[in-house]
Length: 311
Image (cartoon, rainbow, N blue to C red; front, side, top):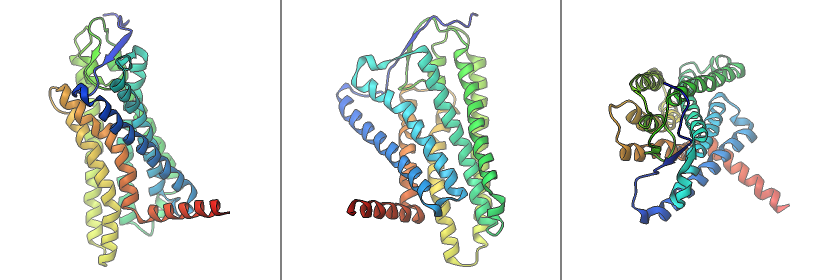
């Protein structure tokens, strides 16, 4: 089978909804997107400017905010275009390939990063006296770099396996962005082997990361229960609660879509909104509202801004 595709343009069907909801949905998702970008930029700015936040935990959080900002940018603007213009539904073959690669690159990196963040929390709680030496700046940089490289490799496998096939017939993608499962349905060849390798690849990455995170938190809970003061236990639980919330919101929908047999286009589109639109917004909200250090840094930044304007 030739690897040369005869299809040069795809059409995204967008989110399944009544036409009358085009404008309201556009407004809602536009507001969410703006809040996501501003919220994550604000976290990056606060961590950069406040020396008290130059710790491993916030170093990884800044990586997470950067990923979330771009993960949302990869999918949401195109979805907004499908809501306001019929021409906005079209996407070129190479743009579709680029979108799929960027989406899985950022999503895979975030998956690995959550695992590293859970390991970081375990070390901070289980070995408080040795934590600074165990998570040195060099170690943090190596761990962060490994997440980006692993995400890139994971995404390259997804993209190559999806677009090495021939596309010579239908070109309507039943989704609001280019993703492997709906694109494989359009291929003019047997996709069973490709689907199996993609399924195993995502399954190993997502399930492996999730199990490592669960294992980390089992050890974290055991370590917390050994803390003698109730105040210390409460503070440790509060620190980990934010991470647990965003992990569940990210992995839950992802595992549902990619690791279940069969595919329902309408259901997949609705569930995908959680980890492409809502989770990137949830991270800055959770990490600022539930984190005293970040809230204190934001207040300092606000006070400094008011003082500067007063001059």
